[in-house]
Length: 376
Image (cartoon, rainbow, N blue to C red):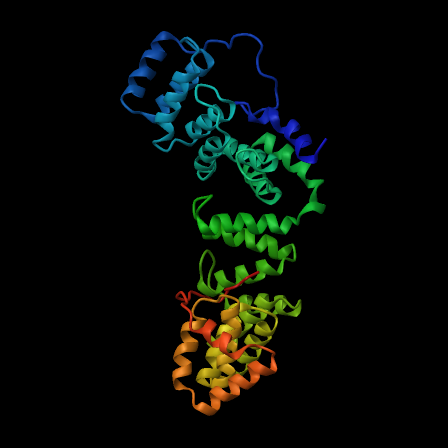
């Protein structure tokens, strides 16, 4: 039996509407609504009140004071869900998941879970964790799954707490710091969760404490920009230095940025160039572009249009936006002697000079970069 199927079986009970790991009732549900209650709820629902629409949907799904009817339940859930009611969005997702009242469609179910999860609905976040774990309605992804389970656990979902315990035994398959970074990204981007830079910074900090150098750079970027945290150039510098000591290319790039702008340290273009060059030599793409620009301007280094062009070429080979465009501008300034030196170095590298220039003359999209660019 595959690992995915084992946990799928264990988590199946959590996909019930109540989401408690208990069996579905074998007898008709107890009727709780009176006819007076029902009339009042229906009046509000028909007037467009989303809470009443949700309650009426639950009544029809359970057969509470009305004949049980999944199709009618789904219709009422949809009305509330489309008005942004998170609980209704989760309920509609469950109807699609199980094919109750609507045609079974797990991808649509996950879409509705996402809408509810973005509002931090605990049940929806748990359902997303299960969907991503099992690869049903969404691509199988342990990191994303664990992220949703952690978020659901924070929202006090008991089934999620159990799922987290189960997944703790699978840490050899992924790093907990990768999960923490994923949650931070979710908060920072504002796509899967409502954008919250404070939470993003908190989760990046947790990943830093878990010794993830990628998180060092992400948190340093927030500290430099003062997003979600107070600006703190000194701490940002320490984070970049720690990452660079582990040989992480973005760490050197980050240090270059700090020295170039004098953030947390005395401005020093020469030291910035040294750090950028270390990152570039380790394959950091935007560092290649920056090194080329600094050679062109003679910033922190003796100006060299030959070296600048060659670094633009290195960046262009990595498809860095802006590299070809800037190289074309640079070439207009180059003398015949400088062009000859470029061609000589290309030949020494066993490259076809004609093909290189044809490649460099191709179209290039505009460049967008920042202090934490090209974080791998």
